[in-house]
Amino acid sequence: MRIVYDTEADLLYLRLDERQQEVVNRQVTDNVVFDVGEDDKIVGIEILDASMHLNLDALLPVHYGTQATRAA
Image (cartoon, rainbow, N blue to C red; front, side):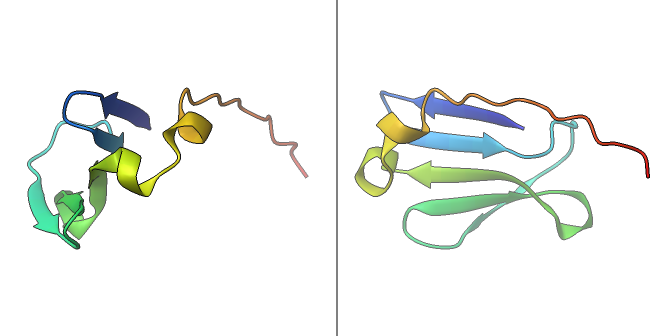
């Protein structure tokens, strides 16, 4: 997953699937657009006017980690 914030456009983009594929944009609200790819799966989410709808200070920068799973 990749998260990108464009400060000039005030656009937050969450890319859920990094594979190259054709996508179709589907506007679900005035400020949210889904990028829909193969098998009708959502591969990206665009949030327009992001700073008006999200607390970007709490969201960015994103820190993440991985956790190993134990075999049963």
